[in-house]
Length: 165
Image (cartoon, rainbow, N blue to C red):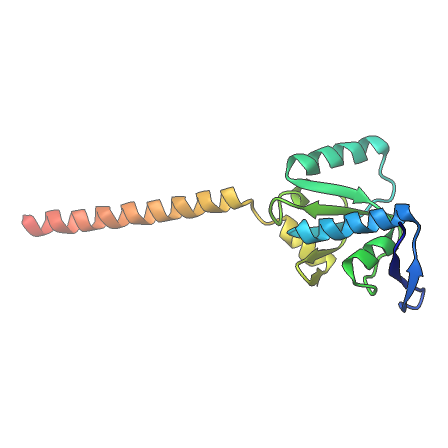
């Protein structure tokens, strides 16, 4: 039941290696999540309590995402990116609903992110997480359109009234 997957050595070289079935299943799950995710954020999980981790998982899930804690090497293999600069304890936040909703729940420092085939720096993923929600952006746009339209109508009306007198 185990499969053969490329293994990343300490020099970043990939070799074929057999994994035990448990790791193979975990790897397949990660690959599937990467296919489904609109974006993925990698956060520094160091020093997080079990209670805080549970709260973060709930918040991410409620906003349409999923949080997984797995080995960095398994994630690199699943993503097909052996050169990702991952070290230490990492948690992976998969945004399944849209690109940013799940990221907004994270209060931990970002290490890096993935959006499509692009690797995002910590600064880029932080900026993405700070982007207003889709609904907020639409509401602001609607307000601006309504404001300028009503201002235009009042101006035209004033010109029409002035021209009649």
